[in-house]
Amino acid sequence: MSNDNDLTNDRKINISFNRHRKYLRVIIYVVLLIASVIIVSNQGGTFSYVFFYGVLLYIPLTFFYMIYMVYSLRLSQELDERMFRKGTIREYRIILENNGFLPIGSISFVWENIVSEYEEDFSDRLFSLFPHEVLKLNNELACRYAGDHEVGITGVKIRDPFKIIELSYRVSTPLRAIVLPAVSDVAETDLNRAYSDMNYRSGRITVNSDEDYLGNDIRKYTYGDRMSMIHWKSYARTRNLLVRIPEYKSSQMLSLIIIKDSMDGSEESMKKRDYFLEYIVSIMNYFAKNKKPLEIVYYDMEVRRFIIDNYDSFQKAYYEVIKRIMSKKAAEEEDGLAQAVGRSSSRKIVFKEKDLVLCQN
Image (cartoon, rainbow, N blue to C red):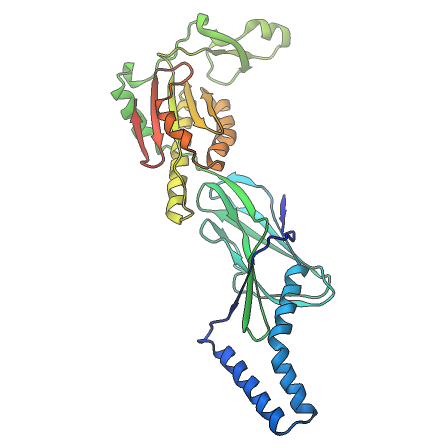
């Protein structure tokens, strides 16, 4: 998959004079310009005028040529996968193309380096391309924090040969990646404490196994399912083991209410979101391993619910529910989720990203 840096009318270009060595190059240019004026005034001649006009026109000609380079450069970025787990190494490719009829050079890139780390660092490298030349750069990247992030090249810088003027702009379509959180046991201690506070028998949620409470919906059999849950009529017809999904009672169901906080783009907020997501996944994994019913309640345009009670439902929630949670911004409506009650549950735990604490209700 790729993102192309297509030209748009709203591209914002920033122009600045290079501040290296306290404007030394700018001072030298001004001195040369003054010297050329003095020479052409006192001596005249072909050489004097060539020197004068060369120095005088350097800045405007360079400016227009740099604008030309902006519209000649094509940049695309590719990842072998756009959704992957935190810490895994992904193949990353950059494709540069000079779409013009003149050579372009002194091009460098602004990299996203808070979330991502790269096998090879191109940040200090200047690139040059002949007319219609295509350059492919293979690299690898890994992401430090879970979430929905921009990765790779986020901006382009172009300098004149003498590094007097610098032109920069953001890529119009940055490369985005959905980075899934790690699966860990970070929440187990808090879960055990929450169970004991709720006075559950033996510190656990009891799942009723009576056939009367099994619903009409079915799913594939997974190792560890009770024999009483098998849909024998379907097995006789298809020879495939299917089980009936329980319709959980309020005394059996626990709801996890997820309330996100707004992010300011800082590394601290990214770390916080990373831990928040890892904690949620840890809770989901705990329930899936122990085959306990857990209802996930979250906000995505509206209040949504998802039930986890085995490994298959955990896998689906990990790739679908977590993706939705991390991809959506916090909404004002989420504050009302704290008052929500699960579809069939009177017991709930509210997990607020702002506080990063479990609140028993």
